[in-house]
Image (cartoon, rainbow, N blue to C red):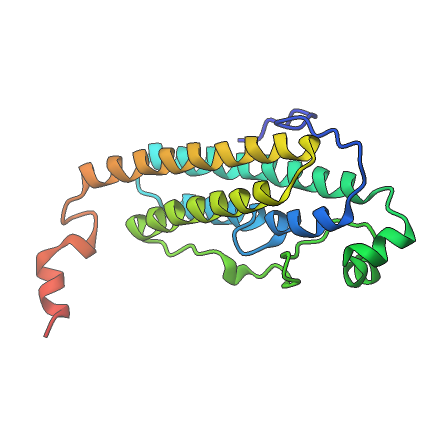
Length: 202
């Protein structure tokens, strides 16, 4: 499953220190729609998927989300690695700095730390794929919001790449849902079994 190439999926080479920007971008590391939640969501859901094609989609996207996590980490690190005391105080990153110095830690821009409640693995393939479609749109929206606030091209280009990959993932999950829907029958999915449903509705 793993073939790790020692380079980022898209290059991150930031020249200007900007801890205020890092404080926002870190949301895509450990925030509610960030890359940790995405990778854990898909790599957990893959086990309950009934068809090899669906497992493959979840494995592919889950591992790519780890590559995105690596990119976001690099962005945050490069934006903070040379920050001065004055920049720490003026940027609003001081509370984070007190707890983590310039270490990369899973937290949202709001300050909320990462929690496994931020993602779902329900075990029902239809439910999980709909969760995944929504998750990719929420991540895309977060990247949209970041792109609106960022003016450094060194940061902007990697963010645009990440946004495009969220769109590609959304499309692949759509394909997965079509594969699943085409194969539905009463033996495979109790939720589409009329005799089961009849007993649930009184």
